[in-house]
Length: 204
Image (cartoon, rainbow, N blue to C red; front, side):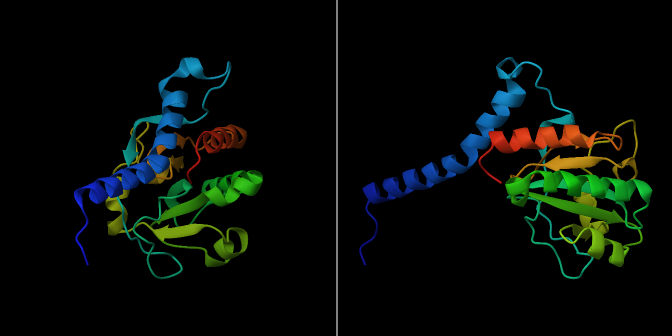
């Protein structure tokens, strides 16, 4: 078989660059227009969460699942992700957060498949019957030592440890941590933010 000629190699490189551009450029433009150029937003359009600027790329880790086995290393990529970190015992505030993210995802209707929910459970884990019955779509991960590099990237607000803050984090389809919501955030505002991001982005 003849080796590829220089012209063929250049054509192949251009093709690969074009495919990469189709994937990354739309998301970059969307973020630039919405977050980097506020003057272009419609009047009164503001985000309800706390932006993380610049967005923080999260490490690609294979973490142990509550149900057994491990996640794929890139499990926080390819979809928009609601990430909740808290005690695996999952008390009142935890259950409220999981309920809210479930309802928000359901409210997206046909776009709900573009969003996943991840519960990073610290300490004793977990109430299997509750998770199986109320949250069958939830990805529950045991937050042991392997998850430490990820947790270390979660911002502290008021010096509170992320595992105790009860915040809900939003991760984009490229695995970047880009927004978070306090424990008392209004679900309606979270839904509005997510709908807007899904409209602006054609990936995930």
